[in-house]
Amino acid sequence: MTTIQPAKITKVLPDSIAEEIGFEVGDMIVSINGTKPRDLIDYQFLCAEEILELEVLDRTGKTHHVEIEKDYDDDLGVEFATALFDGLIQCNNRCPFCFIDQQPPGKRTSLYLKDDDYRLSFLYGSYLTLTNLTAKEWQRIEQMRLSPLYVSVHSTEPEVRIRLLKNHRAGEILSQIRWFQERRLQIHAQVVVCPGINDSEHLERTLKDLTSFYAGELPTVASVAVVPVGLTRFRPQEDELIPVTREKAREVICQVKLLAAEFRQKYASSVVWLADEWFLIAGEELPTEAEYEEYPQIDNGVGSIRLFIKQFTQTAKILLPRKIIHQRRLTWVVGNAVETAFKPLVQQLNTVDGLEVNMQALCSDYWGQSISVTGLLTGHDLLLNLKGQDLGEGILLPSVMLKHGELVFLDDMTVEEVSQQLNVSIFPVSGVEELIKTCIRR
Image 1 (cartoon, rainbow, N blue to C red):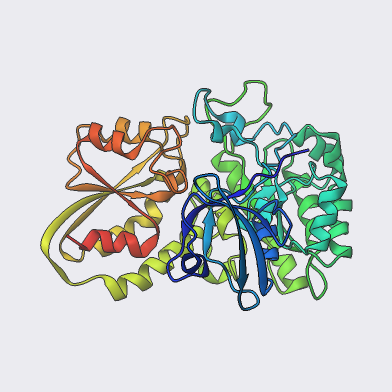
Image 2 (cartoon, rainbow, N blue to C red):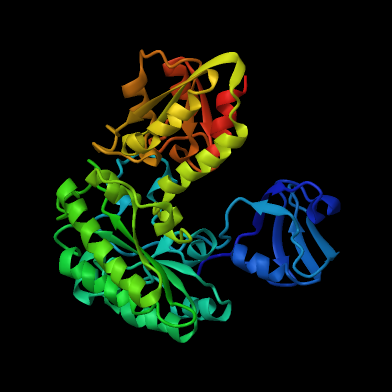
C-alpha cells in the first residue's frame, strides 16, 4: 500500500486565509479534520467545510494544530509541490507508440514516469487507459463524481485494443464506458491512429461505437479526438509501427470529415474532431473556427492553432501600437508544422514601425522528425539550427517547449545553457499577450 505523504506547500497566495494565519513555504499539511488527504481532490473536498482542524508540520519539523473558521467553499490559498500525496498510479501497458518509450536513456527521471492516474485526468485533463484501476478506485470515481475523465481508447474492438496496449484487460473498454453511462459520468476520448492497425474500417467502427454514447441529455462520451501517431528515432525497432504519410493524413481527414457530417445530422454536433497535425501533415487548410464548436479537445491539439490565431488577432488590435520608440529585432522560434499558419501573424507584428520579428520554423533533429510541433523542439534543435545566425536582441521562445514551471527543455538542456551558446537573450513567452508585450517593450 502506498504511503500518504504530508502535502508540502510551495506557495502561499497573497491576502489569503493561509497568509493571514501565517503559513509559510515548506510547511506541510498532515491532516484535515482527522483525515490525511491522498491528493489535491481530497484536499479540496475536505477544505470545503466551514470549520477545519489542521495538523501541520512546519519547516523545522514541529507539529502544530490549527483551527480555522471560514465560509463554506473558501479556499485556504496555498499551492503544493504535487497534486498527488500518495504517489503516481503508473501505467502497466506497453503501447508501442508511447512517447515515454520513444526517448533516449539518461535524462531526468520524471521523463520516464508512465502516468495512468485518473486523478491527474480529472484535475488536468491527462489521458488514461482505465486498465490500471482497482475496484477501490472505480468506487472513488463514482462516490466523488470525478467527471469528466479523459480516456485513451484507440480502438473499441477488443482484439485491436489488446494488440495496441499489450494488455489483456484492454478489451473491456466498451463495458467500462457503459459503467460511466450507468452512473451519468462523462469522458472525453482520444484515438491515436496507427496506420495498418486501427485505421480504415477499424477507425470507422471505433468512432461509431464511441458516438453511440453521445445520445441523451448528458452524453457519456462528450467528445472524441483523432490524433496521428507520433514516432521518434529512439523508438524500439520491433514496434510494428509506420509513420503517417501525407497520403494517409489526407485519407483520414476525408474519412473523419464524412463521419463528422453524419454525426452532425444525428446529434447536432460533430462529436469527433481531428487534431491539427493531420492538416499540417496533409498540407491542407485548417478547419474554420466555427467547426471546432466549444473547443472540447483544445489541450489535445484540436483547434489550438486556430484558437491561437484568433486570440492573436484580437489581442493585437488592442496591444499593438503603430510605432515603438526603441527599435527591436527579435527571432520567434516555432515548429515548422505551424510555419504557414503563423506567417500572417509575423506580418502583423512587422507592421509596427520600429519592430522586426523574424520567424525561425524548425524541425526536430533531436527526435528525428521532418515535421515538428513547437512543443517538441529541444535545446539541441535550437543550437543546431540557430548557431552563428544573427538573431537580433533575443529569441521569443514559446514556453510549451519547457518543463512546466522550469526553464528546462525536453532534452534536459537549460534555457541559460542555450542562451550562452547562442550568445543571445532568450525570452520564454506563454500565450499571445505575453508574446506581443515582449515584442513591444524595451
